[in-house]
Length: 436
Image (tube, rainbow, N blue to C red; front, side, top):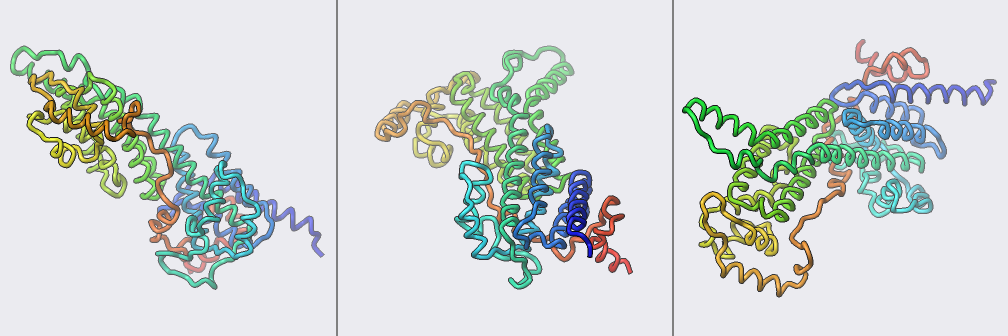
Protein backbone atom coordinates (compact mmCIF):
# COMPACT_ATOMS: atom_id res chain seq x y z
CA UNK A 1 0.00 0.00 0.00
CA UNK A 2 1.38 3.41 -0.97
CA UNK A 3 1.79 5.68 2.08
CA UNK A 4 -0.49 8.70 2.27
CA UNK A 5 2.53 10.94 2.75
CA UNK A 6 3.80 9.80 -0.66
CA UNK A 7 0.62 11.04 -2.34
CA UNK A 8 0.96 14.36 -0.52
CA UNK A 9 4.57 14.70 -1.68
CA UNK A 10 3.65 13.91 -5.29
CA UNK A 11 0.82 16.42 -5.23
CA UNK A 12 3.13 19.06 -3.79
CA UNK A 13 5.69 18.39 -6.54
CA UNK A 14 2.99 18.69 -9.20
CA UNK A 15 1.81 21.97 -7.72
CA UNK A 16 5.35 23.33 -7.58
CA UNK A 17 5.95 22.39 -11.22
CA UNK A 18 2.76 24.16 -12.28
CA UNK A 19 3.68 27.28 -10.30
CA UNK A 20 7.14 27.28 -11.89
CA UNK A 21 5.46 27.08 -15.28
CA UNK A 22 3.15 29.95 -14.30
CA UNK A 23 6.16 32.12 -13.49
CA UNK A 24 8.42 31.20 -16.40
CA UNK A 25 6.33 30.20 -19.42
CA UNK A 26 5.47 33.50 -21.11
CA UNK A 27 4.59 32.07 -24.52
CA UNK A 28 1.52 32.88 -26.57
CA UNK A 29 -0.32 30.31 -28.66
CA UNK A 30 -3.43 30.96 -30.71
CA UNK A 31 -3.26 34.62 -29.65
CA UNK A 32 -3.59 33.90 -25.95
CA UNK A 33 -1.24 33.09 -23.05
CA UNK A 34 -0.27 29.43 -23.14
CA UNK A 35 -0.01 29.22 -19.38
CA UNK A 36 -3.69 30.12 -18.96
CA UNK A 37 -4.65 26.96 -20.82
CA UNK A 38 -2.10 24.87 -18.93
CA UNK A 39 -3.21 26.07 -15.50
CA UNK A 40 -6.88 25.62 -16.38
CA UNK A 41 -6.44 22.09 -17.76
CA UNK A 42 -4.32 21.09 -14.76
CA UNK A 43 -6.92 22.31 -12.28
CA UNK A 44 -9.65 20.56 -14.25
CA UNK A 45 -7.66 17.30 -14.43
CA UNK A 46 -6.93 17.37 -10.69
CA UNK A 47 -10.62 18.11 -9.99
CA UNK A 48 -9.50 21.09 -7.94
CA UNK A 49 -12.69 23.00 -8.75
CA UNK A 50 -14.71 20.29 -6.98
CA UNK A 51 -12.51 20.12 -3.89
CA UNK A 52 -13.91 21.26 -0.54
CA UNK A 53 -10.38 22.11 0.57
CA UNK A 54 -7.23 22.75 -1.47
CA UNK A 55 -4.19 25.00 -1.30
CA UNK A 56 -3.43 25.23 -5.02
CA UNK A 57 -5.69 28.24 -5.56
CA UNK A 58 -3.98 30.19 -2.79
CA UNK A 59 -0.59 29.35 -4.29
CA UNK A 60 -1.64 30.55 -7.74
CA UNK A 61 -3.10 33.81 -6.44
CA UNK A 62 0.00 34.39 -4.31
CA UNK A 63 2.22 33.86 -7.36
CA UNK A 64 0.17 36.31 -9.42
CA UNK A 65 0.05 38.89 -6.64
CA UNK A 66 3.82 38.68 -6.08
CA UNK A 67 4.47 39.07 -9.80
CA UNK A 68 2.17 42.08 -10.08
CA UNK A 69 3.55 43.89 -7.04
CA UNK A 70 7.15 43.50 -8.20
CA UNK A 71 6.58 45.12 -11.60
CA UNK A 72 7.49 48.72 -12.36
CA UNK A 73 6.77 48.78 -16.11
CA UNK A 74 3.57 47.89 -17.91
CA UNK A 75 4.93 45.15 -20.17
CA UNK A 76 4.72 42.46 -17.48
CA UNK A 77 1.50 43.97 -16.16
CA UNK A 78 -0.02 43.63 -19.63
CA UNK A 79 1.06 39.99 -19.73
CA UNK A 80 -0.61 39.26 -16.40
CA UNK A 81 -3.72 41.17 -17.45
CA UNK A 82 -3.97 38.96 -20.52
CA UNK A 83 -3.26 35.81 -18.49
CA UNK A 84 -5.71 36.47 -15.67
CA UNK A 85 -8.53 37.60 -17.96
CA UNK A 86 -8.11 34.52 -20.19
CA UNK A 87 -8.01 32.14 -17.22
CA UNK A 88 -11.04 33.90 -15.77
CA UNK A 89 -12.90 33.35 -19.04
CA UNK A 90 -12.14 29.62 -18.94
CA UNK A 91 -13.54 29.42 -15.43
CA UNK A 92 -16.61 31.35 -16.47
CA UNK A 93 -17.29 28.81 -19.20
CA UNK A 94 -16.82 25.83 -16.91
CA UNK A 95 -18.05 26.51 -13.40
CA UNK A 96 -21.51 26.55 -11.95
CA UNK A 97 -22.35 27.31 -8.35
CA UNK A 98 -24.77 25.52 -6.07
CA UNK A 99 -27.03 27.14 -3.50
CA UNK A 100 -24.92 25.68 -0.70
CA UNK A 101 -21.81 27.36 -2.08
CA UNK A 102 -23.62 30.68 -2.37
CA UNK A 103 -24.67 30.40 1.28
CA UNK A 104 -21.08 29.62 2.27
CA UNK A 105 -19.93 32.77 0.51
CA UNK A 106 -22.51 34.79 2.41
CA UNK A 107 -21.36 33.37 5.73
CA UNK A 108 -17.73 34.15 4.93
CA UNK A 109 -18.23 37.64 3.59
CA UNK A 110 -15.28 40.00 3.83
CA UNK A 111 -15.35 43.72 4.41
CA UNK A 112 -16.68 45.49 1.28
CA UNK A 113 -13.90 48.02 1.76
CA UNK A 114 -11.29 45.46 0.67
CA UNK A 115 -10.61 44.56 -2.94
CA UNK A 116 -11.59 40.92 -2.53
CA UNK A 117 -14.46 41.81 -0.22
CA UNK A 118 -15.92 43.98 -2.94
CA UNK A 119 -15.86 41.05 -5.35
CA UNK A 120 -17.49 38.75 -2.80
CA UNK A 121 -20.21 41.32 -2.28
CA UNK A 122 -20.65 41.57 -6.04
CA UNK A 123 -21.19 37.84 -6.27
CA UNK A 124 -23.85 37.89 -3.57
CA UNK A 125 -25.71 40.76 -5.18
CA UNK A 126 -25.71 39.25 -8.65
CA UNK A 127 -24.30 35.97 -9.90
CA UNK A 128 -24.36 37.51 -13.37
CA UNK A 129 -21.76 40.01 -12.24
CA UNK A 130 -18.91 37.56 -12.53
CA UNK A 131 -20.68 34.96 -14.61
CA UNK A 132 -20.81 31.91 -12.35
CA UNK A 133 -24.28 30.48 -12.79
CA UNK A 134 -25.36 32.12 -16.03
CA UNK A 135 -23.87 29.54 -18.36
CA UNK A 136 -22.14 30.50 -21.57
CA UNK A 137 -24.20 33.63 -22.26
CA UNK A 138 -23.32 34.38 -25.87
CA UNK A 139 -20.57 31.78 -26.03
CA UNK A 140 -19.62 29.60 -28.98
CA UNK A 141 -20.49 25.92 -28.44
CA UNK A 142 -22.89 26.65 -25.62
CA UNK A 143 -23.01 23.57 -23.34
CA UNK A 144 -25.80 22.36 -21.14
CA UNK A 145 -25.66 22.64 -17.38
CA UNK A 146 -24.86 18.93 -16.98
CA UNK A 147 -21.49 19.41 -18.70
CA UNK A 148 -20.39 22.11 -16.28
CA UNK A 149 -18.43 21.57 -13.09
CA UNK A 150 -20.12 22.37 -9.80
CA UNK A 151 -17.59 24.59 -8.11
CA UNK A 152 -16.99 24.42 -4.40
CA UNK A 153 -16.21 27.37 -2.18
CA UNK A 154 -12.39 27.46 -2.81
CA UNK A 155 -12.93 27.53 -6.58
CA UNK A 156 -15.49 30.34 -6.39
CA UNK A 157 -13.22 32.33 -4.11
CA UNK A 158 -10.39 31.76 -6.61
CA UNK A 159 -12.63 33.16 -9.35
CA UNK A 160 -13.36 36.21 -7.22
CA UNK A 161 -9.65 36.76 -6.70
CA UNK A 162 -8.95 36.49 -10.43
CA UNK A 163 -11.69 39.02 -11.08
CA UNK A 164 -10.13 41.37 -8.55
CA UNK A 165 -6.71 40.96 -10.18
CA UNK A 166 -8.10 41.80 -13.62
CA UNK A 167 -9.53 45.02 -12.18
CA UNK A 168 -6.40 45.80 -10.19
CA UNK A 169 -4.01 45.34 -13.12
CA UNK A 170 -6.34 47.30 -15.38
CA UNK A 171 -6.19 50.21 -12.95
CA UNK A 172 -2.40 49.98 -12.64
CA UNK A 173 -1.87 50.18 -16.41
CA UNK A 174 -4.41 52.98 -16.80
CA UNK A 175 -2.87 55.02 -13.98
CA UNK A 176 0.64 54.39 -15.30
CA UNK A 177 -0.34 55.85 -18.68
CA UNK A 178 -1.97 58.82 -16.96
CA UNK A 179 1.27 59.44 -15.09
CA UNK A 180 3.27 59.24 -18.32
CA UNK A 181 1.20 61.85 -20.15
CA UNK A 182 0.56 64.25 -17.25
CA UNK A 183 3.75 66.29 -17.79
CA UNK A 184 2.75 66.85 -21.42
CA UNK A 185 -0.75 68.03 -20.50
CA UNK A 186 0.63 70.97 -18.52
CA UNK A 187 2.51 72.05 -21.65
CA UNK A 188 -0.35 71.37 -24.08
CA UNK A 189 -2.89 73.74 -22.57
CA UNK A 190 -0.98 76.90 -23.48
CA UNK A 191 1.06 77.69 -26.58
CA UNK A 192 4.78 78.22 -25.90
CA UNK A 193 5.57 81.89 -25.38
CA UNK A 194 8.33 81.91 -27.99
CA UNK A 195 5.93 80.62 -30.62
CA UNK A 196 3.22 83.13 -29.75
CA UNK A 197 5.46 86.19 -29.82
CA UNK A 198 8.07 85.47 -32.45
CA UNK A 199 7.62 87.12 -35.84
CA UNK A 200 8.86 85.45 -39.01
CA UNK A 201 11.20 87.46 -41.24
CA UNK A 202 13.73 86.79 -43.99
CA UNK A 203 13.81 85.29 -47.47
CA UNK A 204 10.97 83.12 -48.74
CA UNK A 205 13.07 79.98 -48.24
CA UNK A 206 13.94 80.98 -44.68
CA UNK A 207 10.33 81.92 -43.99
CA UNK A 208 9.18 78.49 -45.19
CA UNK A 209 11.80 76.75 -43.04
CA UNK A 210 10.80 78.84 -40.05
CA UNK A 211 7.13 78.01 -40.56
CA UNK A 212 7.91 74.27 -40.70
CA UNK A 213 10.06 74.53 -37.57
CA UNK A 214 7.34 76.51 -35.85
CA UNK A 215 4.69 73.92 -36.68
CA UNK A 216 6.92 71.10 -35.43
CA UNK A 217 7.58 72.93 -32.17
CA UNK A 218 3.88 73.75 -31.89
CA UNK A 219 2.92 70.07 -31.89
CA UNK A 220 5.94 68.70 -30.02
CA UNK A 221 4.15 68.15 -26.71
CA UNK A 222 1.04 66.73 -28.36
CA UNK A 223 3.17 64.31 -30.34
CA UNK A 224 4.76 63.32 -27.04
CA UNK A 225 1.32 62.20 -25.85
CA UNK A 226 0.72 60.31 -29.10
CA UNK A 227 4.07 58.57 -28.67
CA UNK A 228 3.06 57.38 -25.19
CA UNK A 229 -0.28 56.16 -26.51
CA UNK A 230 1.41 54.24 -29.32
CA UNK A 231 3.86 52.66 -26.89
CA UNK A 232 1.13 51.37 -24.59
CA UNK A 233 -1.01 50.18 -27.51
CA UNK A 234 1.95 48.21 -28.84
CA UNK A 235 2.50 46.53 -25.47
CA UNK A 236 -1.17 45.66 -24.99
CA UNK A 237 -1.42 44.25 -28.52
CA UNK A 238 1.81 42.28 -28.17
CA UNK A 239 0.42 40.64 -25.03
CA UNK A 240 -2.98 39.97 -26.63
CA UNK A 241 -4.90 41.89 -24.00
CA UNK A 242 -8.61 41.59 -24.91
CA UNK A 243 -9.54 44.55 -27.14
CA UNK A 244 -12.44 45.54 -24.88
CA UNK A 245 -9.96 46.14 -22.03
CA UNK A 246 -7.65 48.09 -24.33
CA UNK A 247 -10.57 50.27 -25.44
CA UNK A 248 -11.60 50.97 -21.87
CA UNK A 249 -8.04 51.90 -20.86
CA UNK A 250 -7.70 54.45 -23.65
CA UNK A 251 -11.23 55.78 -23.18
CA UNK A 252 -10.57 56.46 -19.50
CA UNK A 253 -7.18 58.02 -20.22
CA UNK A 254 -8.76 60.32 -22.81
CA UNK A 255 -11.45 61.18 -20.27
CA UNK A 256 -8.65 62.05 -17.85
CA UNK A 257 -7.03 64.28 -20.48
CA UNK A 258 -10.38 65.94 -21.07
CA UNK A 259 -10.73 66.75 -17.36
CA UNK A 260 -7.18 68.04 -16.95
CA UNK A 261 -7.19 70.20 -20.08
CA UNK A 262 -10.69 71.53 -19.51
CA UNK A 263 -10.10 72.42 -15.85
CA UNK A 264 -6.77 74.07 -16.66
CA UNK A 265 -8.41 76.12 -19.39
CA UNK A 266 -11.13 77.40 -17.08
CA UNK A 267 -8.73 78.19 -14.26
CA UNK A 268 -6.24 80.23 -16.31
CA UNK A 269 -7.41 83.34 -18.14
CA UNK A 270 -4.24 83.47 -20.21
CA UNK A 271 -5.33 80.18 -21.80
CA UNK A 272 -8.72 81.54 -22.89
CA UNK A 273 -7.45 83.57 -25.82
CA UNK A 274 -8.29 83.14 -29.48
CA UNK A 275 -4.75 82.18 -30.50
CA UNK A 276 -4.43 79.71 -27.65
CA UNK A 277 -7.70 78.14 -28.75
CA UNK A 278 -6.14 77.62 -32.16
CA UNK A 279 -3.10 76.02 -30.55
CA UNK A 280 -5.13 73.56 -28.47
CA UNK A 281 -7.42 72.81 -31.41
CA UNK A 282 -4.45 71.88 -33.61
CA UNK A 283 -3.14 69.67 -30.82
CA UNK A 284 -6.46 67.93 -30.39
CA UNK A 285 -6.32 67.18 -34.10
CA UNK A 286 -3.22 65.08 -33.40
CA UNK A 287 -5.25 63.00 -30.95
CA UNK A 288 -8.08 62.69 -33.46
CA UNK A 289 -5.65 61.36 -36.07
CA UNK A 290 -4.38 58.83 -33.52
CA UNK A 291 -7.92 57.60 -32.87
CA UNK A 292 -8.59 57.24 -36.59
CA UNK A 293 -5.32 55.39 -37.12
CA UNK A 294 -5.92 53.12 -34.13
CA UNK A 295 -9.52 52.36 -35.23
CA UNK A 296 -12.54 51.74 -33.03
CA UNK A 297 -11.32 48.26 -32.16
CA UNK A 298 -8.74 49.73 -29.79
CA UNK A 299 -9.58 53.44 -29.51
CA UNK A 300 -13.25 52.88 -28.76
CA UNK A 301 -14.95 56.07 -27.55
CA UNK A 302 -11.67 57.87 -26.84
CA UNK A 303 -12.32 60.80 -29.18
CA UNK A 304 -15.80 61.33 -27.73
CA UNK A 305 -14.30 61.52 -24.23
CA UNK A 306 -12.69 64.86 -25.17
CA UNK A 307 -16.03 66.57 -25.76
CA UNK A 308 -15.68 69.20 -23.00
CA UNK A 309 -12.30 70.49 -24.12
CA UNK A 310 -13.28 70.20 -27.80
CA UNK A 311 -16.41 72.30 -27.35
CA UNK A 312 -14.56 74.82 -25.19
CA UNK A 313 -11.85 75.26 -27.80
CA UNK A 314 -14.51 75.48 -30.49
CA UNK A 315 -16.01 78.37 -28.55
CA UNK A 316 -12.64 80.15 -28.23
CA UNK A 317 -12.01 80.10 -31.98
CA UNK A 318 -15.59 80.98 -32.88
CA UNK A 319 -16.00 84.21 -34.86
CA UNK A 320 -18.79 86.72 -34.20
CA UNK A 321 -19.52 85.56 -30.66
CA UNK A 322 -21.54 88.69 -29.97
CA UNK A 323 -24.14 87.59 -32.52
CA UNK A 324 -24.77 84.21 -30.90
CA UNK A 325 -27.81 83.75 -28.70
CA UNK A 326 -27.73 81.75 -25.49
CA UNK A 327 -29.87 79.07 -27.13
CA UNK A 328 -27.43 78.71 -30.02
CA UNK A 329 -24.52 78.39 -27.61
CA UNK A 330 -26.14 75.86 -25.27
CA UNK A 331 -27.92 73.76 -27.91
CA UNK A 332 -25.55 73.86 -30.89
CA UNK A 333 -22.05 75.07 -29.97
CA UNK A 334 -21.54 73.76 -26.44
CA UNK A 335 -24.37 71.30 -25.66
CA UNK A 336 -22.31 69.30 -23.17
CA UNK A 337 -21.19 72.33 -21.13
CA UNK A 338 -23.20 73.64 -18.19
CA UNK A 339 -24.24 77.27 -17.83
CA UNK A 340 -21.55 77.96 -15.17
CA UNK A 341 -18.91 76.47 -17.48
CA UNK A 342 -20.04 78.54 -20.47
CA UNK A 343 -20.23 81.64 -18.29
CA UNK A 344 -16.72 81.03 -16.99
CA UNK A 345 -15.09 80.63 -20.38
CA UNK A 346 -17.24 83.36 -21.91
CA UNK A 347 -16.23 85.96 -19.32
CA UNK A 348 -12.54 85.02 -19.43
CA UNK A 349 -12.24 85.01 -23.24
CA UNK A 350 -10.06 87.64 -24.89
CA UNK A 351 -9.23 87.99 -28.57
CA UNK A 352 -5.49 88.57 -28.85
CA UNK A 353 -5.53 88.03 -32.62
CA UNK A 354 -8.36 90.08 -34.11
CA UNK A 355 -9.46 92.21 -31.17
CA UNK A 356 -13.10 91.18 -31.44
CA UNK A 357 -15.59 91.11 -28.57
CA UNK A 358 -16.83 88.06 -26.72
CA UNK A 359 -20.39 87.20 -25.74
CA UNK A 360 -23.01 89.92 -25.79
CA UNK A 361 -23.93 91.62 -22.47
CA UNK A 362 -27.45 90.22 -22.82
CA UNK A 363 -26.20 86.62 -22.95
CA UNK A 364 -23.90 87.21 -19.97
CA UNK A 365 -26.77 88.75 -18.00
CA UNK A 366 -29.13 85.87 -18.77
CA UNK A 367 -26.55 83.33 -17.62
CA UNK A 368 -26.09 85.22 -14.33
CA UNK A 369 -29.82 85.03 -13.72
CA UNK A 370 -29.93 81.32 -14.48
CA UNK A 371 -27.03 80.60 -12.13
CA UNK A 372 -28.62 82.63 -9.35
CA UNK A 373 -31.85 80.67 -9.71
CA UNK A 374 -29.92 77.40 -9.58
CA UNK A 375 -28.36 77.65 -6.13
CA UNK A 376 -26.53 74.34 -6.53
CA UNK A 377 -24.17 76.00 -8.99
CA UNK A 378 -23.17 78.81 -6.66
CA UNK A 379 -20.66 76.54 -4.96
CA UNK A 380 -17.03 77.46 -5.44
CA UNK A 381 -15.46 75.94 -8.58
CA UNK A 382 -18.73 74.23 -9.51
CA UNK A 383 -17.66 74.48 -13.15
CA UNK A 384 -14.78 72.00 -12.73
CA UNK A 385 -14.90 68.37 -13.83
CA UNK A 386 -13.89 65.38 -11.72
CA UNK A 387 -11.76 62.42 -12.79
CA UNK A 388 -13.64 59.13 -13.05
CA UNK A 389 -11.52 56.27 -11.68
CA UNK A 390 -14.02 53.43 -11.40
CA UNK A 391 -13.71 50.23 -13.42
CA UNK A 392 -15.81 51.01 -16.52
CA UNK A 393 -16.81 47.49 -17.52
CA UNK A 394 -18.55 44.42 -16.14
CA UNK A 395 -17.07 40.94 -16.32
CA UNK A 396 -20.02 39.86 -18.46
CA UNK A 397 -18.92 42.41 -21.09
CA UNK A 398 -15.45 40.91 -21.06
CA UNK A 399 -16.77 37.36 -21.40
CA UNK A 400 -19.04 38.27 -24.30
CA UNK A 401 -16.14 39.95 -26.09
CA UNK A 402 -14.09 36.73 -25.81
CA UNK A 403 -16.84 34.49 -27.19
CA UNK A 404 -14.73 33.61 -30.24
CA UNK A 405 -12.43 31.50 -28.02
CA UNK A 406 -13.44 27.85 -28.29
CA UNK A 407 -12.95 25.83 -25.14
CA UNK A 408 -12.66 22.69 -27.27
CA UNK A 409 -9.74 24.26 -29.15
CA UNK A 410 -7.51 25.21 -26.25
CA UNK A 411 -4.74 22.61 -26.52
CA UNK A 412 -1.28 24.13 -26.28
CA UNK A 413 2.15 22.60 -26.38
CA UNK A 414 3.34 22.31 -22.74
CA UNK A 415 6.82 23.62 -21.90
CA UNK A 416 9.73 21.24 -21.38
CA UNK A 417 9.46 21.51 -17.60
CA UNK A 418 6.04 19.80 -17.78
CA UNK A 419 6.43 17.70 -20.92
CA UNK A 420 9.14 15.60 -19.25
CA UNK A 421 7.03 14.85 -16.18
CA UNK A 422 4.79 11.80 -16.06
CA UNK A 423 2.23 13.59 -13.89
CA UNK A 424 1.55 16.10 -16.68
CA UNK A 425 1.18 13.68 -19.57
CA UNK A 426 -2.52 14.52 -19.69
CA UNK A 427 -1.53 17.81 -21.34
CA UNK A 428 -0.17 15.83 -24.31
CA UNK A 429 -3.12 13.53 -24.90
CA UNK A 430 -5.09 15.69 -27.35
CA UNK A 431 -1.93 17.00 -28.99
CA UNK A 432 -0.61 13.49 -29.63
CA UNK A 433 -3.98 12.25 -30.94
CA UNK A 434 -4.23 15.18 -33.34
CA UNK A 435 -0.77 14.49 -34.74
CA UNK A 436 -1.52 10.82 -35.49
